[in-house]
Structure formats: structure tokens, C-alpha cells
Image (cartoon, rainbow, N blue to C red; front, side):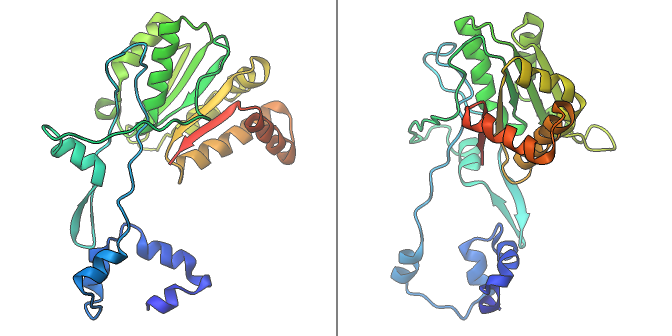
Length: 263
């Protein structure tokens, strides 16, 4: 079976087989495989660091760094699985020193000109850097307009920093705030749907006002859907053919006006 999955034509099947699988799953499924302890340890790779976007501005909280952590927990192959870092932070890190280090995302930062409008799309934990952006703009008195798209399953229990964002909206820091709750109604609504509802204004912000467009969060589906929605907006409201819209997006990227931090 394993030799068959390694065939180039079975790449998709191999990905499905390996998704969510751990070493123990493989050993349980193939008890004929034997290793000495030394051989087994030698085959293991080092645990990779987990990178979290900082959810606060040092100007607002000079002695603190805030994170938003969504605890990963699910059942697979008859066992309950937990996220290595998220479950550790949530359940076992109360009195344990946690080693951390800063990693700079040099491509993903606020515009140099504080007057530049920004559009931020950050569903789920992707909201983290945008909370920091807004705190930074508030602390520095930046005059640029700010538009936030946030999405999650249910408003009642998943609206991370909701009170803060509502205050920012009331105070005028957030020019616009659009939220998508995918499970609060019969049909699912995601951030890309909210973008399409506001397509004409998004095009106005990007093309006329020179706004920068930011996306943070899930790379597998959300980022692709948001990118497709952006291209559709440029086509329909910019009066461009498909290839022209793609060229426009590439120029946004080259000009560092379309920035993504996806994972």
C-alpha cells in the first residue's frame, strides 16, 4: 500500500493519508515495522517552532506582548489530538517558563505614510496583527482610514476583541467594520462574501484612495477565496478583463500594496 501511495500519480492520496497522522499512527497501522530505540529517535525531526502574530502594539503596551491562541483539539483515527503549542499554552503553561523569540515579518507592516488607508482581512486568529495595527495607528495619531473585515463561526462566542473593535468604530479609528458569522444563519457567510457585498467601495479605496490591502490567516482556503474575490472586484468594478485584473493584482504585490501573512 505504501509503495502505491508513493507513486507520482497518487500524490493527492498520499496527502490525504498523511493529513493529521502522527508517527504513532503509522506504527500502530504497521506493527511489522521494527526499530531499535536509537534508530527510532534518529529518524525523528526536531519539533518546529510555532510562530504567532503579535496582537498588540508596544506603544500601547510597552511591557507586554499579546497573543490570540485558538486551542486545537480534534479526534482522528480513534484518538483525541491536541495542538502541540496551543494546548500547552492553554493547559500546562501556568507556572512554566515558555521559551520565546521574536521573528520579524519584514514584508507585513503598516504603510510608511500614516495617511495611507488600509483594508485588513483577518478572520479567526488572523485578526492578531490587525489589532496591533489599529493600536499603533491610534497611539501615533495616524490619519489614514482603516477598514477591517473579521470572520468567525458565531458572534456570541467567537468575536475576538469584539468590544475593542466596537469602541474603535465608535471613536472613529475604525472607519468601517464588516463581520462575517458563518454559523449564525442557515447559509454560510465568510469574509469574501462581505468583500463582494462592498465591492464598489473596496475598488474605490484601492484604486482612487491608494489603500493597501492586507490578509492574515488560513492559507489553505480563506486566503485563496479572498484573493479570488479581490480579482473579481477588480474585474467587475475596474472594467478589466481577467488577464488585466491579474496584472493589476501583480502590480499591487510589486508595489507592496497587497500583503499577506498566511499559514
